[in-house]
Amino acid sequence: NAGVTQTPKFRILKIGQSMTLQCTQDMNHNYMYWYRQDPGMGLKLIYYSVGAGITDKGEVPNGYNVSRSTTEDFPLRLELAAPSQTSVYFCASNPRGGLAKNIQYFGAGTRLSVL
Amino acid sequence: AQKVTQAQTEISVVEKEDVTLDCVYETRDTTYYLFWYKQPPSGELVFLIRRNSFDEQNEISGRYSWNFQKSTSSFNFTITASQVVDSAVYFCALRQMETSGSRLTFGEGTQLTVNP
Image 1 (tube, rainbow over the protein chains, first blue to last red):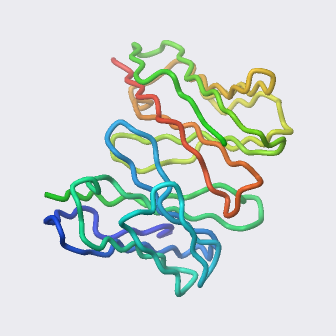
Image 2 (spheres, chains in turn brown, blue):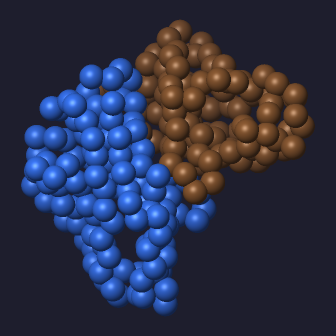
Image 3 (cartoon, one colour):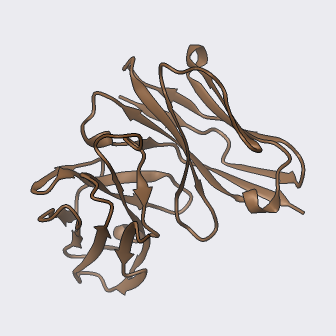
């Protein structure tokens, strides 16, 4: 019953460092998403993917990159980390069809601090 | 453009009180989905309900009920006889059908605190 798995759970970065947040799902979902949640705020969409090899920008893509080489994995890359990227990052997925269509299932989140 | 507004930033109640969380949305689309998610202190987001724009029937699930009114673009959530375990941030979200990939627009959330 893994669902959506995110690693790491916590990370502290120095300004200018790079890192990759990992996300994998075992539900064979076509659609995957990355959101960020700033303190006291709702979720903002960073990038999303409708299938392997296809990615697209969300509301706040600047400073991030993604790839989707397999159905299961959707890593988020931060290049030159900045303090403004301090946030909690959530990965989510949902199937394209069926009864659970449009219901996004979320990972536990990655809490990132850039100092 | 689509938008979700949760005007109540924080609500505090005493256990066993009823509480209603408001959600107002804006969309140009005639077909859309609305959602509620719960984020307990542990941080994960838990799906509560999905409602499509053609189904205006209210729904009840145990102590939870949802009131969808298209005329006022609202999708309010009521918890009856609240319990301490209901303490969480609750998010309302909108999926507009014209957008690709089932993307959701979230409100900013309502922090509910239920005191014993």
